[in-house]
Image (cartoon, one colour):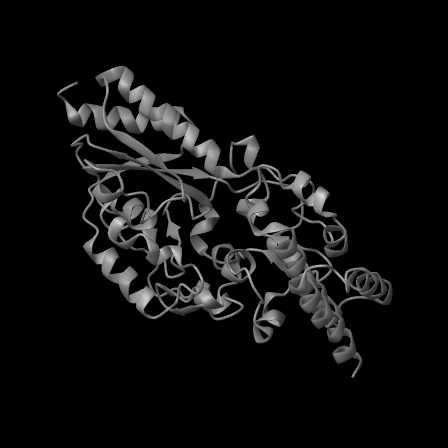
Length: 362
């Protein structure tokens, strides 16, 4: 093994950039403060039905329990903001007949791509120093990725609880390489939110209950992705036309003026998901859904979840004064076509959506 660990750490950051990551940093495994915050969040039941957040005990805050021998975490980030000529986020959200999909899910799933790049980074390190213990993670294991990234200097956790980089905003994915190499660590990033509360004020459901505190049970990303059952009726009108995730808190963040469009073709929009009509997306058969979400993060919610979310958005469109007679007729017809869907979950949300037309008429 090369004895100059400072040199090796510098090379690791360089190799990460060569592999397509926008930044890499190194953190130790001391996560006591983050662990306390997590325990408080869980005690308040703000994780909702995300039971996996509790399932793994202290593995999240003790990396060496997840991968024995871990001394350092190499944290990386990769931009995903898709530069397109299509409508802006505001324009999409203001058009009730269009479906809004969170920008991170417009292209192919990031998990495999980033894991492969992390594996390539590990292989590059091994070519230089020989075998070392390591394990790569990308958002699919009990890892406190944001606190680790903050410790590694990649950014700070903002008031919306997403990671923000002063030079790149927040439109990026995170990944980690756990390792037994005693590398020198980077300086943690400092917060730069100041008195800004734009993300708190913009949240449609009030999910950011205090600066740096998120109640997932109110978050549209949770409601449309993590929640498997019925979306609470009182929250449905607040979803607007958001059918998979929500980007409002990021879109309004002033630091995202520094965001750089992704260089990864895999992250670019597919199947018109950046600006398709709700009726078009609702008309997908299950086979079409599976085909068009192959390799996409969207597939994880399943076809019934997809229809559930779009039904809510269609109901909100019916209640909107902005849609015309023709659009309303198309929406009602699309909903009626699935009023007897085999899934009770879909039927319940479709029937609710149809009632929104009645409520508008009244």
